[in-house]
Image (tube, rainbow, N blue to C red; front, side):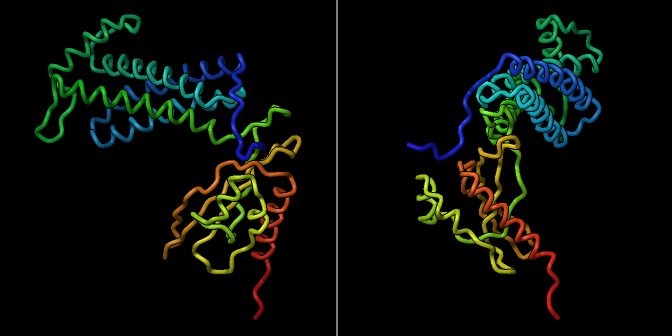
Length: 283
């Protein structure tokens, strides 16, 4: 049976592991230190929540970039490396934060770091109005912070690779082409979607330009190998515009494998769209 959707091969080159480890280590140290000083100098709880999310995202993204550079084709392994990087970054953050508070901690002594954290835990680290969490409550908050950081790091690294097709024959990542829109011919829940998922590309060939002013349409984006131009995938998204042209998007297809003729046809639709946009209206 013909493969319908792109799937990573799962290959993990040694160079890729080293690239992920190196990028993760740099991200853990740099971002961990920045976050540690940041939460010390910016004692606003709500802002700290955004910083925590950014911290986790940054660590995961650095590992994802290392994975891309090292041609790693396993989102699972990338997520695992990012999880370890997130743990390391959290430890760096604790060391930097405790030192910023004037507590002498040795980075090579986790016992000393835990002892210093216990001292802060007894006194409280921050307040929200008249509420200053200490003891078990504060440990829970710290635990949630660590879970968010480490979880986001793993999720981000996994996502960076999961949405990036790779040409095994050419050893190249596919390039994402421009979004071809607005198109009509397929909708969410359409019976045509079932045909497409079974490998029937005829509904894709039937896509055409949407009439001017239509607020619900389909957006198509072709990803293609820049070397051989043979391997191509299609991402199809349903778009709904509100009165202020704000987009509400729902992905219909993720990296459907298409032949080069289908890819060429969709790119010609994009060319037709650009030509139509440049054609002046008649008086």
